[in-house]
Image (cartoon, rainbow, N blue to C red):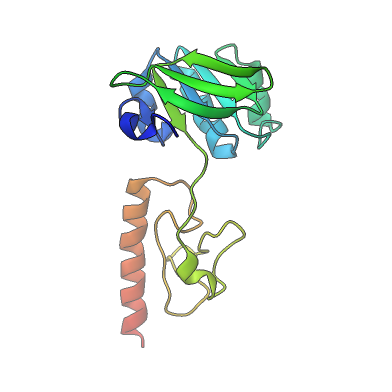
Length: 184
């Protein structure tokens, strides 16, 4: 994406959960249409001056949360719209989108990309332990259905992708693997 590399960490973030508080009373945009993206947009709407929600596709916008966002006066929806460019001089200042009404430049102080994560679980795919989204299925002890195979972090089907959660799950997986090995 034009402008992405030079502005990442300078108003461009991939996690509203982690960085929303940096944009209190600011004009922001968020790109994404998944449940996670809509949840992030709702969180941003509480603290930001205004949220421009860029929806590349319908995604979850017809859900209860999507209807709430539609009704929120602090949220502008851009349906069937693609992000084309991120601009700014040292910090995000604007984005360019292309949708039903053509290209449009939107002035923003920050941009959140919430397009979803692609788990790097190819190694586990042949074991039959991944779900339809490619995430490794684990139980509360981080065990998979394959004996002796444990998984933790964003590659699993555990709720929310956050470093703190992944670290805790990693410690739990290590302890579970240790217990497994003791019993072998």
